[in-house]
Image (cartoon, rainbow, N blue to C red; front, side, top):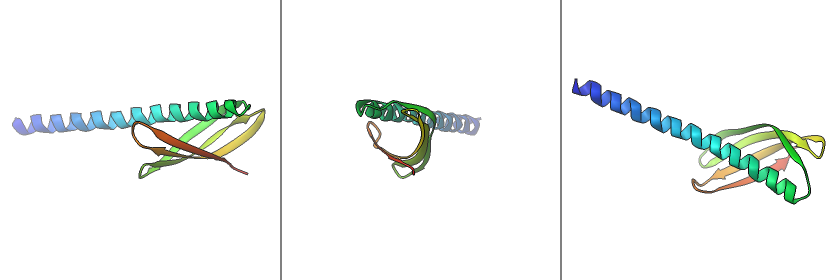
Length: 96
């Protein structure tokens, strides 16, 4: 009986940690999109994001792709996000 209880606690803990990672990636995705839109707005541009994939995580970096409409023209960016936990740095480069 004790082994079953320990196994259930372990399984529950793993589930909670997995769910925490998914939520934080969702929050990070939202914050990155907001930051890119705000920066483009500050530069006098209008960006509407149609698709954004944070991409694969390599160490603390994510490498993804953002597709959208910038000032009425379709665009695609390579996006690199460095996630430091409480803060993040984002860099995006227009694909040609």
